[in-house]
Image (cartoon, rainbow, N blue to C red; front, side):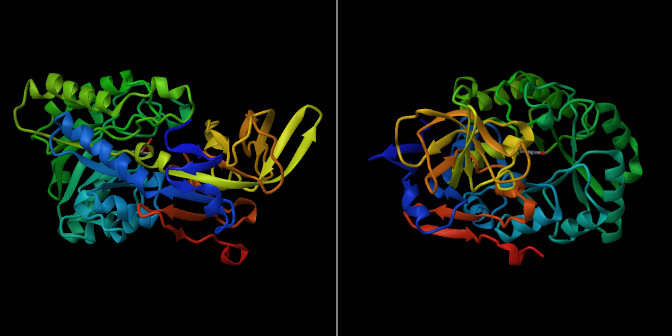
Length: 422
Ligand SMILES: *Cc1c(COP(=O)(O)O)cnc(C)c1O
């Protein structure tokens, strides 16, 4: 079993939280988060970067993986920055106490209004705009000129690599909309009038998500360093992106690189491709999402009923793809555990109530015989869970509940009902 999920006296616990006790207080489905796990994940990431002697590491948590304000406040207190992709995420990060100078603004479709808002919101604007096209740089330059500000610019380099991951979460090749080819970066740099109100401070990559094999990452970081040496000025930072995978499937744990391995790879690449030519230290920025948040949350659900179609056993649960989309969107695997321990006997298709065939959390899963009102949890739903959810089928959104370090549980986002859905 997973380290943070365990049975004590037959009752499933999430870290120290007794799930069936908590489910007496809150109607299912709900997301349950652990403060301890979230903090540990952040600290482990930061400490691994420090230990590998990376210069002034800045961890910009990817808000799109989880944008709950209470959770962000916890990360902000630990010193986390933020990777944001919209003005909404920018506002949320600021409200949670993450300062603009620790925020990188990513995304291919930043609007004029968004650029204006984030530039105006603080003295120097965000830590960087991670620019994805020449057209975007032109717009940032125009807005900065009007505001008489200097925008801090980082180009997101398309390193033209092909990581081994799902095609929908792979982002580092020419056929993807993300990043800029090196030639286009040069074209942008040569256009002097764009730089009156912009300063080039960094280069970034983000080649995809749920990366378990680091070969493409190593190649991409090499290219990032080589490109950095070709820039007209010394850069303040290199942003290696996010995407480090987690073990959703039990088999993933063998493949999953340790943080230490990942950080040492970055250290080695920097030594070989950057510090062999430059002595001035360059800061390393990270944009992890799921590595910090995925394992800090689970989705607690109840069984609505059983349904049998010949030899197909359907277990219909009250959580659906609108609450947690990854299985239906990417065919992602997530483990399912009954809250009450019993021998696994039956093969089930665990499905939600949504009118879509893809509304299925797992096919052919071996579980104990479960019946109406029994509790079941979907593991590792802290990333791309609530933040990706919707009210599809006019369903209310589930509550988000936090199990705190001190053992107390707290609603950190109320469930919504039909009345809230206007
Ligand atoms: C989605 C995204 C991330 C985070 O990805 P994870 O797989 O959650 O680590 C980081 N940076 C950018 C630019 C992204 O689009």
